[in-house]
Amino acid sequence: MLKILFLALSAAAPALATTQDDVLQADLLPGWQMQNGHHMAGLRLQLAPDWKTYWRSPGDAGIPPLFNWSGSVNVKSVRVHWPSPVVFHTNGMQTIGYQEGVVLPLEVVPLDASKPVELRAGVDLGVCNKICMPAAVQLTAVLDAGGADPAIKAALKAQPLGGKAAGLRAISCELTPIADGLRLTAVLDLPQRGAETVVFETSDASVWVGEAESARTGGRLTAVADLVASNGAPFALDRSGVTVTVLGAGGSVEIAGCPAP
Image (tube, rainbow, N blue to C red; front, side, top):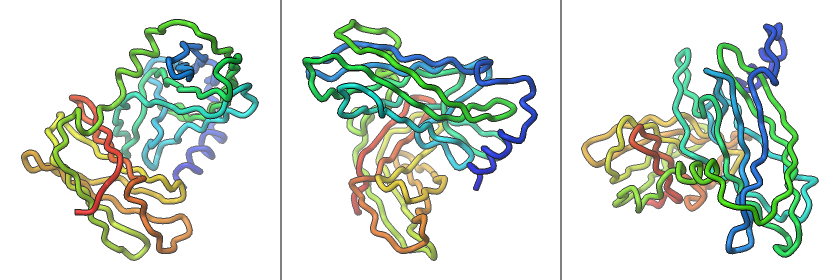
């Protein structure tokens, strides 16, 4: 409902002399061809001062970007590599995203690595400052062998660490039935990295995941969130498809899978 309200308010607002072109500039960085035949390109989003856009899991008050690669030539798949985002607290609501812009590395898998690749990207996203507005861009780039792009390389370096690299010693997840779904409680034996925000994601897009509450006792971090299917019916959770991200001032950690105790 919050996302519907976001769009409704954006459409109803009297523009305030602000247009998409005033606050957002976007382009595709062609990047380079990797040794495995994939291409590492980049989507660069540049925002006006104090404006922000959102991460893949932006919180209930945020709008996740949606990507459409249809129309691309010689493209089998595209994987987005996400740099560590920032946590925002506005009017009592938590959102997660990027301030004043971001470069999203795009790993493009061609159908035939020996042939030219043309990437066509349609991106729908939300951008916010004191007001929020929906934005949409259509971009095209021809990807060739190219060379190292420092902006893409910096964004790749800014990705969260994996669990092992961050010093994760153990993780366990307990599932408890609730009236309309499941309560997920994760316990992580993980060194602290400053103030922490925990985000749960599942591989099932139809499952709503609530904002996690977390607490730490020494080296143990405990986080709890509710999971509800869109149809309100009971569901089985694929533990291997759960992603646990710990966002911290000292760096972020991304953990794939949430095994039983």
